[in-house]
Image 1 (spheres, rainbow, N blue to C red):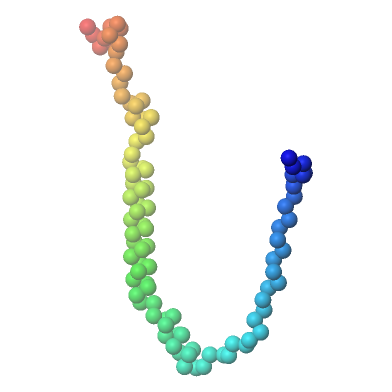
Image 2 (cartoon, rainbow, N blue to C red):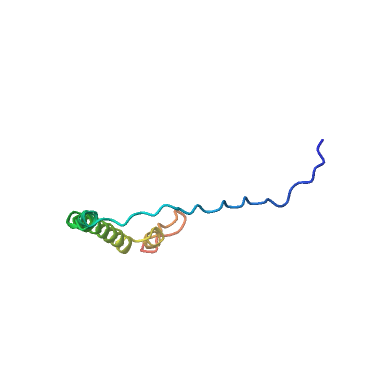
Length: 95
């Protein structure tokens, strides 16, 4: 049998020293800058996708809002139903 005490504290491992890059990245050439600007400035297709996603999200929210607004809760529906008279009680409407 072991009679070692149960450890109550756990030591977290120390993070390693951060690696600092020593190589210098050269500045982009004017041609590379123009290519990068051309790639990131083509937004006509992405704007159409954004518009479609926005429209779809808006319609889904509108649908949920309409359902929530016009649907009556179950408890409220049950309270509106008339309670049928018990067989041993006389009908209050007239017998």
